[in-house]
Image (cartoon, rainbow, N blue to C red):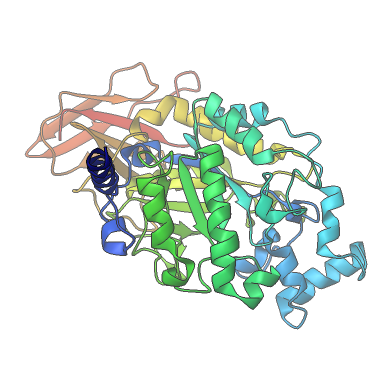
Length: 459
């Protein structure tokens, strides 16, 4: 019997060891491919929602980072800076000097939050995944986290599992669900006193709880810049995520795991308002899976101070999506809900326009990849390209009526315009394709924003 148990233990140990495919080091972690569903999805919705949604205020001038309404508490504590002064002047005038940031919890009630309606809005927008801020840098958790006692949406405020309710609705609608998670917390006493204890006793257990409780498709950390990944024990967490967690096969992660990791380690690379490491990448083509994130306006959290001129138009956002996809990336477009749980109507309108365009033209977006022979992209580009299987998609963002000329192709079997029932005339000679654009009338124009030509059988 003793011999049998020893053998059994040895077999079980060997089996467990064989299942540990990824070790806790970057060479091993980076060897895991990003699951293909992510690159196929192309378009996701980001949600910044928390106590900062109550004051919902930020300046509309200054640098990108100065406009972020979700940084309200941090800016309140920076009284000596010009940005901090703007936040403090607003706060003192509206709420008074004795009103603390923590007191905003009384206004964060989410009484109009209907997760099924949110999921329907995002699905109608053509998004394939959703990423919710489960916890921003303020440390307030949108789920009943025992590691954030009396500082989570179940214990105080809405008294509701906001993360869980939205996760259920999003998954039921057929979309992928993910969570943003801030590694650091601005004013958590444990973090300020002992980073290592904070990571061991608070951060890691809280992240694992989020994963095991809701089984997300995406883990999207942020706030990594204070310390290197070794201090955050990032590879240790990722080894657990990839080897043992309930989402080990399908989960996707970003690159924000330590001050040295962006565009180097993790999963997909991230840019933010066309910036990475504070360098513009607007014209770059990135071979590695990547994702651009930005707001419809200048802030991620809802900003009541923004007006119509601060919001991008539907045309801009559709062109922005086309630009990112043609360079191999995804777009994670942020929506800032109100404290009572509504998606602002102007943001709904932008999402609806994107969805209407994608319903007609999504074949040239979803599941596509970079066309390796595409001309370089710059600020004058109005003809973009994506590729899928043997087909090429030429996406025109400016209608001139002139012929479209594309070089370096095989003879296509057919050229068509997505959403247009008429025939498209073209000629081909010596690898040069000339597409004669049709004369469109209001009744047969498939889009006011961009037009997609499918060039069949050329790749």
